Image (tube, one colour):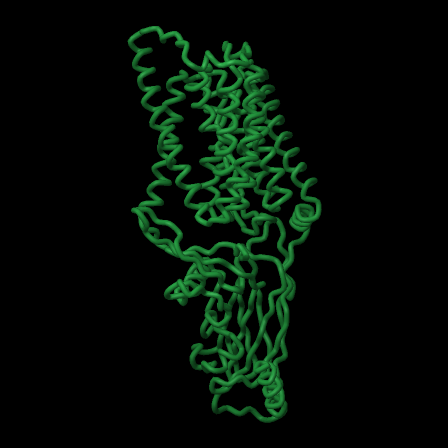
Length: 254
Length: 304
């Protein structure tokens, strides 16, 4: 209810502020995962459309956030019990994006205030939603920090401060590299124009990440006709086993 | 060459997978083990999700065991009758094992149990085999003829059956029990169970080593085929692309391994297998004992 009210208020506020708008171009709005997919680099470029002359102070900044499909994850912590390391506590994180990249035109703290970050959930810690930590778990914060740490090291979460080039307060561009380990789905992309930490304009679009070709066929078959898929994998296994055996017998005779 | 796996949703090097399949295949052909106890941890290590690794590994074992069994069939070193008895027990055991597994899963800590299972069984079997085969090797060096198998309590049991290939005339009860036991363990540990089956056949049933390998492979085919279908239909975790890459290496390796095995003496073969088992056991034990660099791990939500 509160959120809705806040949104309404925001809309009302943003009407006169619509002076500066984003016009966006993408090198590709679809990512096709083929059998030899090895990651993808997406070039994001655009311009700021405005009717009034450029207001140079405070400077306009750009924040771009690309997010993968979100899903719940369970985070476990190991502890030493009776001399061996075992999983003891676990926290369910309600929604953590499988991929998340933020690119900014200046250090993050300068382009977006804490309040605005909280409202739009832009920074990586804000993009992860966790409410249900059990009371028995002490230091629940460390669990969502662990998600960020682990996924950052896998290149799935990226904080690219200053990676957006912003010329003449009008033209901006950046590139975001998506790793090979992508999951399928809609990747919403948000672009914020900010001035002294306040969001003055937002723009949203979606990048479509999809398996194609053989990947698509196999994936669909495994979900829609699992028995057939299972039998097919067994048939391949048996055929390969027989084939190798026959080939080696021929080799020995020949 | 990077390959994107459709079910695992990760991108891996195709040659790495071929190589891994080949190496494990050689071991499989030599020792009559499916190789799952080696391959599954290896797949975890290169970043395949555990559920996909376990399910796909089962499919790959079908291929390498089938390839191996054909080589053994030609040399008439498969006791089909014994294999069928073991298999009957094995399928019953696997069904039990799944029930036990799901019960433990509801209690949590199933990860730890699987690892402890590995450490305990690999450790016990590995060291027993090592000591025994070392003794056997020493005896054969001193040219003492191997002592004739003594009659023990096993020979007093009813329902006797003649296993001509193995040269045994024993009750079907011990092989059935061995089958059930291995079935349970393989369902819990997610492997074919060859590394338990092979020593059990040698030491408990007194089967000749040459027959043991082929017979073990024979029953592994069916147990793992059953597991593959179960995983494919319930969890959708069999990755056909991953399986194909692994099994191309695997079947070729199995053929080479079977031939390598004929050059080695039975005792040497057993010592090597024992060392391998002890090595894997030590690695897993160390993982439990040494403080991991990352204390946290991310898993799929179980949805309470």
